Image (tube, rainbow, N blue to C red; front, side):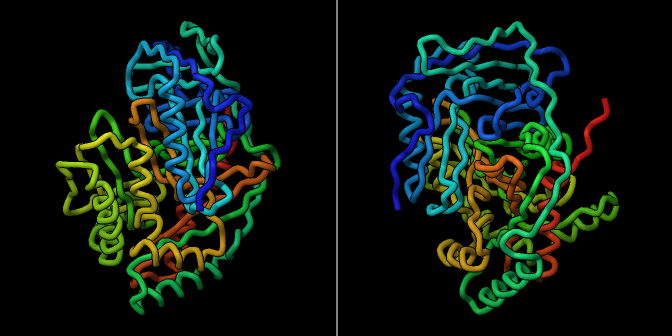
Length: 437
């Protein structure tokens, strides 16, 4: 299945971008997310971790595509757009100059499709270096005076929030897990990742900035993202390409935290020894290393994972690294990795067919690549986890998603509890009280 790109802008795809990047000196204590103005959910972009990263707003240009060649369509479009851009870059760091934010549906036939967005304004931070990039398709670009203190209005709370089961209730989803275990034990496959969804209704329109701020406060070690109405905090870096170095963080194997430090240390030790979780993790690491190997030399694949501690859960984690040997862009590398065993299973074809049978839902852009890329091809792409999608037709509605890796030793009730834990970040972000003045 293939499809042609579609632009949701009046501007023709060949119209040249005019881009200028200059250094920025914000006021002390300024956070990237504080700079976002109030705008539509689909026009707010973010990729922030521990205060560093990129935020953007507006649309200078964008493109959407679907089908099995959606990655290639976006890649070709961006190569054409960035290659013809008129660029003045006074900072020259990864993420300066023309930048596109992207979000790609998990499945080729999903109506959610794939999108690249070039914001009108991008503000970036790397350590003590700040910059602002303005982009337009006119001869006169958007102008932001770098000497002016930027600040967006206070984000709006969503008001009363109600949650409802998505396509499957927890009991029904536990039944799907049990069926998956039966298929695995019968030898049909080794692992499958099953996801479930949760429907959300808010009294006030969803303000993406509210969610981003609360996620960043509570999950600073994750990448807090927003692209085209998809918002979340992912702990998993699918691939980063920067000046010839390629890295990927693999997460598979999860245990819920209790909040008691001593107990959590004991749980972390049990996770590190769990044969079920180590098996699940090994499948995921192997799939990433095999996908990157054709593009990299000097691959470093640690023999054993470490335990990554997040505020709500702990994961087995492995950082894979290699030296790029060709000109493959970060987006193309993400395409070669998708779907990894961490979001699909092993073998890929059998796992993908089974999850589509058992989940009974469209994942949309959940579990697909999300991130950004600059004109050189450098960029960062995470897996869209711990996230939700704002309904493009109704800004009072969202769908939240969570998934779990299922292997022969999985227990349905335990997997339901794990999926509940993975839904906590977005549920808490939606229901967090308004901060006191």
